[in-house]
Length: 111
Image 1 (cartoon, rainbow, N blue to C red):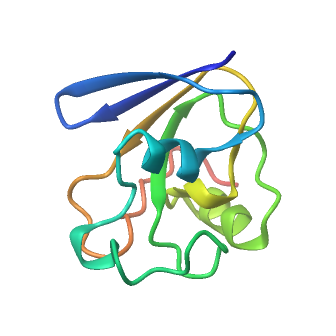
Image 2: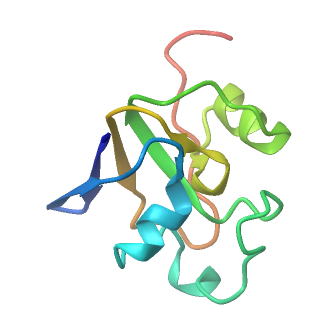
């Protein structure tokens, strides 16, 4: 069973999830929202359309398969938690400073 380590501000949560579990659903079931306060009610419900469930993947991410998540990954934006399946141990950070979408992280190398 993979261990999902979730960093929220100064708090660390360890979640044991079944392999293949959807990251967004795992977070919501644990009472951890990947959304900004504004988008907790106004979002696409996990269909990969609104990009409001973005989280920062620190380790253990699989390659993106959804077109929107591929763009986020390619250009350094937070990955869409609704489009990520947890297949192994993973560490993520919930972005606590976003208004709607997460900020782009500066790229240290060109892609």
